[in-house]
Length: 557
Image (cartoon, rainbow, N blue to C red; front, side):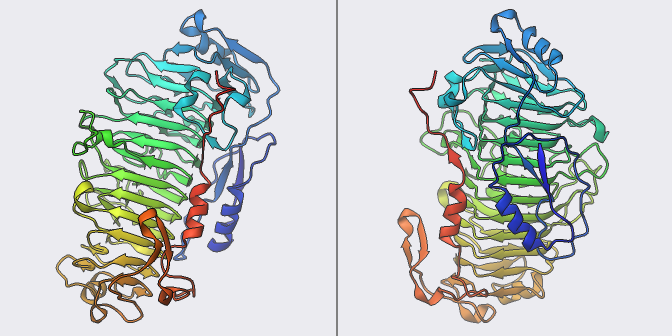
């Protein structure tokens, strides 16, 4: 696995440009062993630092043997192959066959990869960089857990395994599974025991529509990528469930171009205290993913399938550092187990043993968040246990659409925020039914709200115990920058100068999702001489980078 490192002395802007470029690199050279970098925590800028290291997940060359595992040889045949495999070997599982059991990846010496893949030829799978779907199931071997335990787990220090074109699932009719793929058990207290250099590539991972599945993938590992994969039917009644969750792995992590479906939190970092002292999951690249919850899980929807799974949010960071969240589609989240916010940056020292927990250096750009009860919630410090503070978060060039209302929940807040440092909300276009910004508790430091388009609705910018607009800004955002925003239906005497308050605004074709500005007054009118609101062309380009599968039926099994 190749890494790209960025110098701590490089400016945040230059590093961000390099990051954007390198995310497109598709090298085809062998990958080498690498160690997780030492976290950089000295950033004093208001801009978030990007990930200091990126994973190159391109396919390695292999020079070992290919071992074909006969599905009729019994449940131990695959484990025997894993135990005997040498770095550089390929383990081939027969397409369409089922391998049932609880399998463990053993620790091997060396830095060459062991690849576990389908026997289907490469042209029977979507090409690298293209997301797989359930329609490829006949071309995939099936690894199935027969009980509540993982179908795949890792021995301490296991490293350099890659799954390509494999289906993972639970046994039909089994009532509960606690975690399907467990990369690190979350209890390892020594960094050397944490597994690393692991890749899940074009895999189909799912539960059963009626079964409690707590988690599809546990990322308590280092140097791990999940790419071009499809995760679905992850849900529990009365408890949290996630498509992906990590709390005791240092990273780096690459989660790119996946469909991710989870009832509790589709994706979460944190949620339990790390056993490794001072560990913060870091250097996370989250791009081009589609995070969604099926409406068949929504009690109020006509399509409701009859199981009341616990619903919370689409993406949450409780303990994370240097994260880029770019070009993703987040949709379908409603008031249920939480108040309906789709995205949460809420630091938590979850169990009271990790006071170093932090959410810092977060870049949230070029995303669409839609069909959800509320937008983004910032909680600057844990209100139950000591923690570090949420700081350096950039929310730029995103579209927030269909936020709140009767269907998703009546909160409808665009942003809710308390006690943060250096949060910038810039060049976003939002349509929501509640407040633009809701504040409470301790004031925020160095807050910027610029170049955004949003309806005022009843209260606009409102804080607990203060009045609309300027009184709230002065109390909860002292010294903030609040200008060049288009606040539809607001009153200019309630807000700082250099904002705009039209009764309405015209877009090219809002009914069909075209949010290009037609109102000429706001062209080139931002603080940076750009159009106010999100750059629709740039947003579409970033979202389009996630490529879904196109099945070639002539070549599928």
